Length: 247
Length: 331
Image 1 (tube, each protein chain N blue to C red):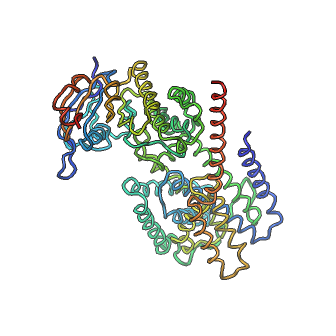
Image 2 (cartoon, one colour):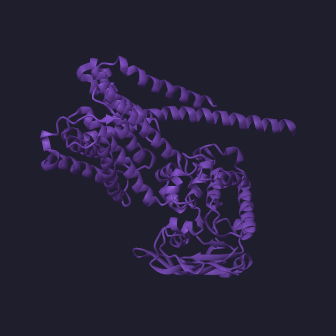
Image 3 (tube, rainbow over the protein chains, first blue to last red):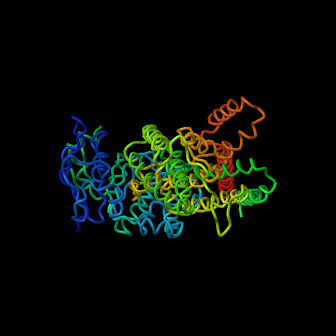
């Protein structure tokens, strides 16, 4: 199977504190990798190092065999890598449709051609399809700031898929989402994974969500890889139970 | 067509008609005041783009008006046409604005305000001290009014139409810009630059562009301002002008298309309306601004926006409730 992402020995220090202490893993095409671990174990910092939001002190990140360590997030996004954040990150003053169009527009043409091109950058249809797919149809014209938390979470996820990314990193997509909405989100992610072959890396605390969604799970503890394997293997690992699942 | 759209269109038509017809009954002074409103609106539109849409604080817009005014005055008093001065001012302000945008890539909010404030002071010192170029405190006199399409816009009435036409062209250009994907990217830059960056928006380039275009419009306003007052010296281009322009944008409604027009009207026309209060004008004005900021920090248009949003939310809630009720009836 083709390797999409290769993370090699990533180290990130903040002063004297080592948030990520040499993490390595690989993600294959079409895979859904879950990353779990207690709060403060370096999951989000690792994401930020992979996605160019932070520059790692050591280590490298390869995308499709090409080194992308330190590339800016916007450049990585144009290479087909997308993400969501731990906290909600929609644009409240834009409507749901505009949020989605914005999420895809920078992939269309050049900056100059976008200025003189169509207002929707030719993305209205795609945005409406995404709105329908994430069951936000009745909210298309509403400002994102007026949506409920769960609806914003769905929009947040939809935005990450708008440009048809090959690799999506989701940081706690289930956080604060009610059970019905969560099931909807899981279904959508599984559908995108099956239909488009998109690869996911998911940070999540909701064990049921992770174990039912992911094909492999990586467990982080104190900035290091504690275990990695299928959900069943991870669940049965005594070290993991002691460090994380048992609490 | 929605009621809101219809009302906007009606208001716009009435406004344009008023601006086209009313000047024939205006005194010389009234023509000057409304022309000044048009010029200040152009500068405020530029600042609204930088601050209101892209979220980058600038206390230097007054300097760009000064750069435009001096470019216009120097070139036209040396026999060059106003159109050439306009091109030079636009290029100059774009380049300076682009350079001024670089600090915004590293600092934000009040730190950025301080950087632009320092630039504002620097600009004023250049206008005042570089006598070989600007004639310093003696100023440049007899700035000629332009010839447009073979017609000399010498009279106040003709030059009034030059100001209004310029405002119309700038308004159309900015309306086009903010409706384009660039406008959406500017809003994203203001609301959440980190998320925007993760969605492929090159925030560095858009930040510089927001500064450059906003500064350009300050320069355009300056080129028109010079022949309007016919005499240019450094005194109008102190930090005071930058603060006034900032206030126009904030009072009118930062980030709203119509905000700068309203803000400029309040800053330029209200003093004339309140002239009868004599020395109390500034007190009334200050009290008005303070009360407005308490009631609506998003400016006058923010009040209207809040009302319209609340109305639309009420309508949407009622529609959802009706839909739920109809489902309930069926089960």
